[in-house]
Length: 169
Image 1 (cartoon, rainbow, N blue to C red):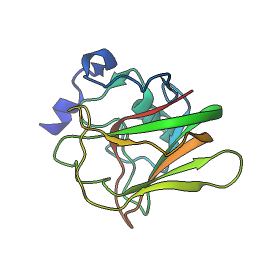
Image 2: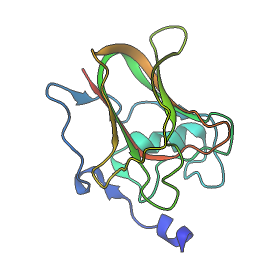
Image 3: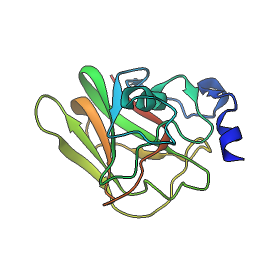
């Protein structure tokens, strides 16, 4: 059953066929401070910080890393702990029965003040995850940001992805 499968051991990043970083880039998201808009009964973490951090840890959960509650425009964000140059973002969707959620989202960045939307995926085109087909977004030129937020465009939905990578230098 679903509950039993969630208790299985997590995969290690080395066990999953992740593509290498773009040339000259590192994963800026790895083990950085994160947060999300809420938690719910499906969240593995007890706090929003604990649950959201699973998306950038060295372990890849079997179905999803983090899970918000049902709400308007749920979000996940990361603090890169300094202004960084962003070249690519990869979002690994869950690849089980609930993979159709989270298909419409925005990517927002913040340097100091307000959030600025830099991309919107406003269609229902499916994308995968650890099957080797994550959503990949590359800005036309590198963007400077301290924080990155991924926000659902759905009026009411859950947000839950399996892994998030942010590449740059």
